[in-house]
Amino acid sequence: MWIYDKKLQYPVKIKNPNATYAKIIISQLGGPDGELAASMRYLHQRYSMPYGQVVGTLTDIGTEELAHLEIIAAILYQLTKGLSIDEIKRSGYDTTFVDHTLGLYPASAAGVPFDMKYVGIKGDPIADLNEDLAAEQKARVTYDNILRLVDDPDVRDPIKYLRQREIVHYQRFGDALRIVQDNLDSRNFYAFNPSIDN
Amino acid sequence: MNERNRLLNKIMAEDFAVYEAVLYLDTHPGDADALGYYTEHRDNVVQLREEYSRKFGPLTIYDVEGNGSWSWINEPFPWEREGNC
Image (tube, rainbow over all chains, first blue to last red; front, side, top):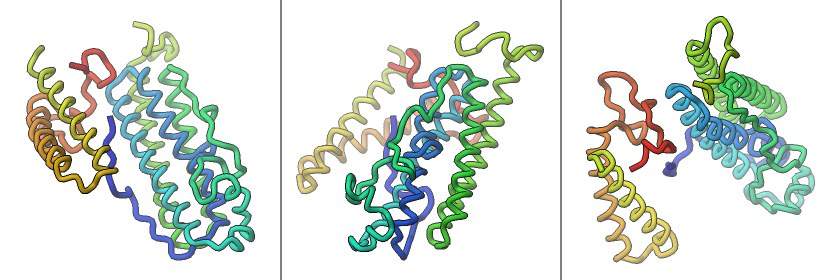
């Protein structure tokens, strides 16, 4: 089970609200490579993972992704707090506001609601860990793109932290894939699936 | 039931008592009786968790002993039959 820790993993202190930024950063809440997809992917892949090191990695990275979901939410909250209706209209955030007011609804920047179709859970350690390696790189690219689009250092700082964590996760999933392969038939990694074959 | 399972069972019961009190206190923050109920069971949880992790391994990432190897990844995991009491 989980217990809530009443603090962020990394501080978010944004002086100037800016709904134009919120409109793009929301993709890391509910978009295809966002933090909700990441946490759901890892926390549900772990049940069919055969090795303790890899189950532990999925549990702990999946848990960290929930903390990242909260950091993104904190960024969106501070970017949209105290805006006038005129600012909301000018920024284009009115298309979100009309359905959700200032509630944080997980969706992509293009307005597509969060979908588990973004997440692969194949029940095969090689397939799932390659999915995870790709997912971390895709999230890293999304953060790179956000950094291209956002000038405010108050927003860039936590985004840079999250981008760096994608790279660390990529390294750990690489370790996990090596651990899986060390347990397989070295002449044919696909000779059996350790999740279901004995 | 072996000692590990007996202790785990007690922790789960005490944790549940705490959580039930938490939900009630969220909407009744001034209820002194409920606050007393919370502190009594919270104190039990702290003591039982300390005993469990010392004898049988970590329940959270803060419980791992600094000697030996990283026991956090040891099986069974909580969703396995053997991980339950």
